[in-house]
Amino acid sequence: MDDVPDVELRQLRYFAAVAEAGTVTEAARRLRIAQPSLSQQIRRLEQRIGTPLFRRTPQGMEPTEAGSLLLNGVNRALDELRSSIAAARDVRPTATVGVCHGVPRSVLTRAEEAMTRRRALLLDYRQVDSQSQGDMLRAGTLAFGILRTPVDPSGLVLHLVDDAPLGVVLHRRHPLADCPELTWSDLSGQRLLWFPAERAPGYAAGVLARLREHGWIPETVIEEHSGHTLYRHRLIGHDDLIALRTRDGSTDDPDLAWRPVGPNPPRERLALAAAAHTPWAEQLTDIPA
Image 1 (spheres, rainbow, N blue to C red):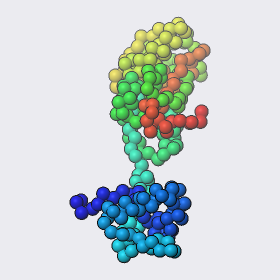
Image 2: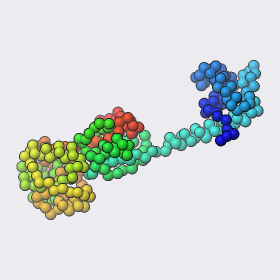
Image 3: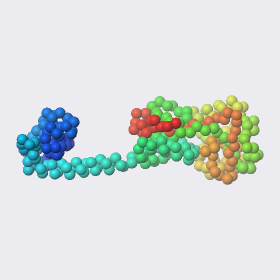
Image 4: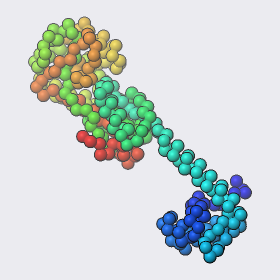
């Protein structure tokens, strides 16, 4: 406003410190600044307000009537400012988190602990393909991402939150369901219920390459929809169709079974990601392994 002089907050703090200390020397010591600099700032404040704020006495600095009026207002304002700053610090910022399809609940819990270990956050989850998350993180559309690796790591900070072998998911009346553990030769002739590779191309290519190394080159049945109902519907009633999931990633559906397969099954590695050099990335530093 036009009737408010151009006064700096620093000058008001200095003024209140001198009034409390009683001398410029003691106030300068408390503020850890040079005494001449403090005296200069007090003179500038008096010039901007247009009236003396202190009487200089042999005993020290005594506020004038104008100084006492100003001091009351400054103390109220500083108290209100401190309270507002404390309230602002207590507000939990919202972080938008991209989550790829099929993240197990246990992995989501570990990711949440990592994202909030340094500061409390409100987490707003969005389902986003692993392939899309990198660009969205770099653009600032997402604060964090939970994605399947490998991905392009440029400009990102990545923290591994899960590294688990894939096993076979099939319906409980499937001829292979009675086997406690499967081999690659057991899967001969089986089709693979798979996802669109563009969602996580690095992961998809790596898994299919490992299957070829083991001599299994299955026909893939692409499931465009990620919901459990359609996934379950596909598997139940087909004796030549299986899916690959981690144990934690398989569901507790009583009509489906998870079986380990080997040797050397492909692995699913899930990472928590943030754009480098952002406050979000700082949340992921020094996380215990």
